[in-house]
Image (cartoon, rainbow, N blue to C red; front, side, top):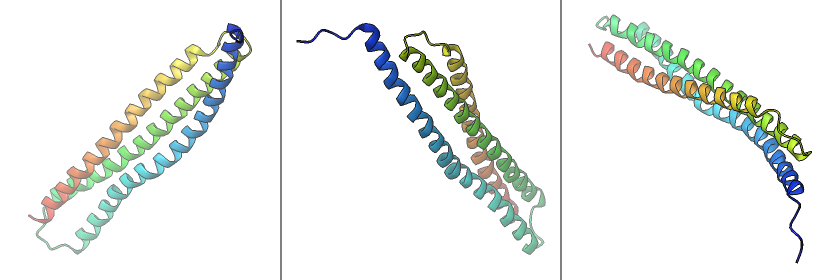
Length: 163
């Protein structure tokens, strides 16, 4: 039977493993950020932007019997949806940037623990994580509001052409 590993050696070894995991997490978050931004926000930009183009095309070819106020309300909703989509993209980017910083701070903490010292970036890591959480909420809220703006804009546009 072997003697148990010295506690200091065990903590350093665990910190080394955590450090490697933190580095891998940083790379995965960067990949996630790119793919999520590409898929989710392209869709919102496409539906709101496409709706604006379709609405202008329709207005140019419409019969005189349309409700102009509803058509303009639809246009405003689609434009607002695009603006919210941009806010969502910026919020998502900033959330992932702060999460990546938090993971980097975690890796630095694990690196110092690996060498037997106390972590130096615990408070910084917590602030970065909190900032990431806040920006994530902003991004999600803006994306949901962008979708709602599209739905309201579509209802207004439909009401304007069926008048």
